[in-house]
Image 1 (spheres, rainbow, N blue to C red):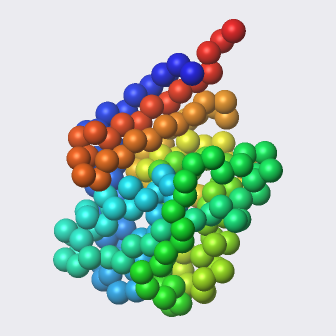
Image 2 (cartoon, one colour):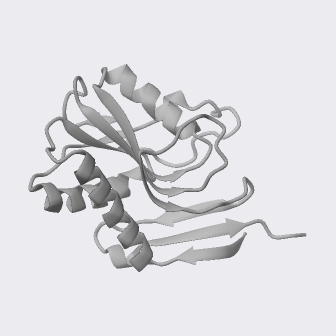
Length: 181
């Protein structure tokens, strides 16, 4: 794969700050708010967002990890090859507003699977979606409530996101395209 575009840490960090601003504006009081990182890509973004939101709201926000492995509809074609983190909710999802957090929104299949996983645990009051990159090419009718960056891509391209909660200066996004033969 060839690198078509690189997005550096300064632009990524500004996008995360915009996400936090939008969430804080929509939820000025953090009562019953849960940030749920979709494993694996959404987990580091969830940590970065929680830090940014805590500064704005003056309180920490409970975090969760959502493992979508058992709800994927492509498991036969794309077996799980990497270690995933098991679903863990810091609080009871009942009557909570859960903000699903993921690094990239593509076809919508991951979002569908994440909602299915959340509903196996409980019935939240509301579910919202925050994504760092919306790359288009939806196959299911999902849209993010909060979007950091919009990058038009083709289905053949790949968006690789590297987020480092310990040192956000290492954050990097690369849009890759297949090599022509």
